[in-house]
Length: 131
Image 1 (cartoon, helix red, strand yellow):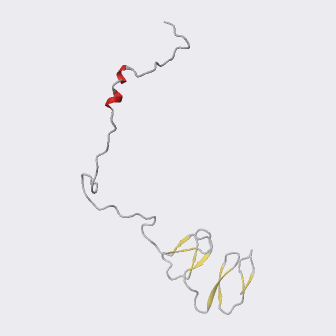
Image 2 (cartoon, rainbow, N blue to C red):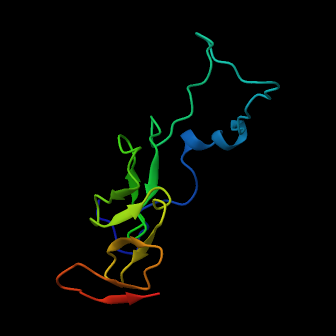
């Protein structure tokens, strides 16, 4: 039997096996839940809250690159070197009679309180800082 190009591929209307489906179908609803939901099995406390640092170690923020610098094992030092940028950052107040001065090249200098001019010791800098 030959078909014409004008004949539809799908006949309009539902086939007979779908005819009573629309009448019997109802949307299922979830049962109402009142109170806390419990699951079968062992009842236990929730796990502890997690943090990025499991054992908090004392640290400061580098004054040049703002990276955390660990102070572990360096409790007696007044200055620590950053592992990221290599510059020094003060941990404590300067020793008595001294002050910290930071050069524009980021070099941390420790000088006498009475000093008004400080020379940077770096060979590529050699600036004179006046205060």
